[in-house]
Amino acid sequence: MAMAMTGMDRLNLLTDIEGVAVGHATDLTLGSGVTAIVFDEPAIASGSALGGAPGGRDTALLDPAMTVQTVDAFVLSGGSALGLDAAGGVQAGLREIGRGYPVGSAKVPIVPQAILMDLLNGGNKDWGLYSPYREMGYEAFKAAKKGEFSLGTIAPAPAPPPPPSRGASALPVP
Image 1 (tube, rainbow, N blue to C red):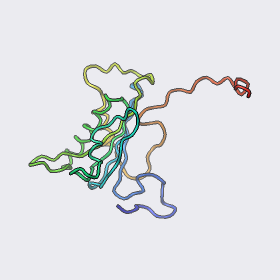
Image 2 (cartoon, one colour; image 1 turned 90 degrees about the vertical axis):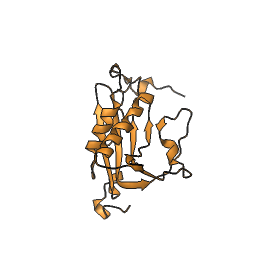
Image 3 (cartoon, rainbow, N blue to C red; image 1 turned 45 degrees about the vertical axis):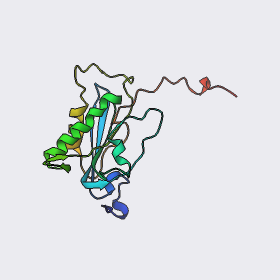
Image 4 (spheres, rainbow, N blue to C red; image 1 turned 180 degrees about the vertical axis):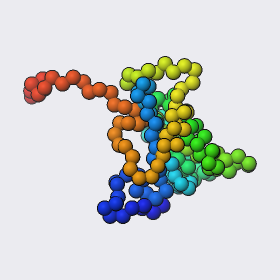
């Protein structure tokens, strides 16, 4: 993949790379969201999931020893393990446009995903039988575009409000 923009035209964003689009879906009532990073063509990808409790889907495919060496998209979402449904929504969008790794007559979009724990950040998590993340993943896929996109805590999850400030006089003195 080549750089899409040069010099002063660069945005210092992932979308500066030709063939990369980014989309978000945020649900403020839920207090969570999904980001989709979609490639125009399957992209070679490699990665490692570290930490005490990493949450992910298809991240083992990012090991260079695996058979599948390219991905169609990446997903980042809130929802802890319940948010792993988001990759299914992105896969649905990719299948809709005929993308995916050929398996017989089927095409299986390869969409690794990482999640974060935001179940305790407030927001209404009483969504019923199925989590809303698959639909949010599809919305994020449909919203993916090249160029400028919003930064900050719009996705995967809105930031909780800061604690009340008591001013500098409340700081401990050494």
